[in-house]
Image (cartoon, rainbow, N blue to C red; front, side, top):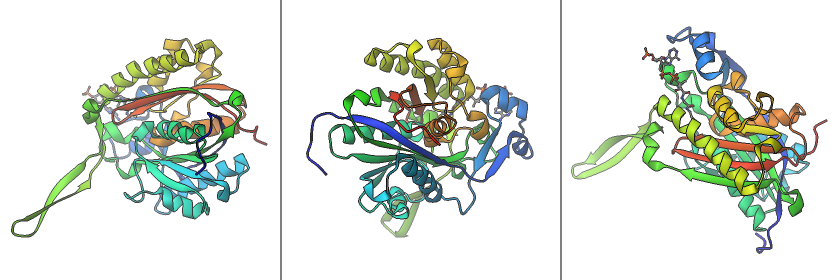
Length: 340
Ligand code: COA
């Protein structure tokens, strides 16, 4: 670690993604659930989702996405100084980032996990940015990956239709302050509403000997009050986006893109409408992947960069929200090179 210097700029310089092979359509789901393609599409905008196979672990997918991001940034793994892994479905409860560090051969990087469910990527990006801003690290990889298929009750139609698996990564590096890529941000938590969306430990008691009671347990499946989460998102996302735009003194008409956590197309539409942002500026890939939790924002970012839609200098308002309850927003400027 270097000593603290003056504030420096943060460039979002490269991106990558990795998707499981298996795509499961709404019609596939209606093979065993009492649901239909038209219900799922009209209520959520989702048409299909990817589901990871046994050989597609969180580490495998995250490492693939990370390699692609490093390549896009033009870095070798040994140049990395920090890997921040946003996930709520780790391969190892003690942390999965170290396995990704080893798989990449990023021997000089410290690597750790950050858990904030669907807000995880945005929270990790903002956290990583602080290390760069203060001069601690110059090259950081932020990975958003979740395999929520591990924790979905596949016989609960109110949950199973929503989620999918994916990994994506973004590189952040030091740059001149006039090219800064993080123009404003805000983060919020409301733990009093934690029960709206949880994946709690189900306790079980072990008594190996009389008088000794050990509290153990295991994780079951995601529990959600869909309507409460929907109302929360529609209320809080526009409010926090307005706050970051105000912080930066930027009006909505100057935005190139609105990049929201991909949970429900109706939430994306409501937020865009509130700001008068035309539909063509609202990034959405929800139809293909569903809600991939910490992966949605970097996955959408990567696809838009690869397609030449997001270009260097573009201004992007982003918001993540979900379990916690937690939510956040950032005003970003893409600083990567044009692909190809
Ligand atoms: N297929 C068919 N019917 C379904 C269904 C499915 N997959 N899931 C629920 N239903 C039924 C319900 O049983 C209910 O039936 P009833 O009226 O006979 O009781 C009816 O559809 C309406 O259910 P409701 O929960 O009111 O639907 P909704 O319009 O609120 O949509 C969600 C449900 C989950 C799509 C919506 O609440 C939502 O998207 N919430 C946010 C969830 C989210 O994004 N979570 C992650 C945040 S990071």
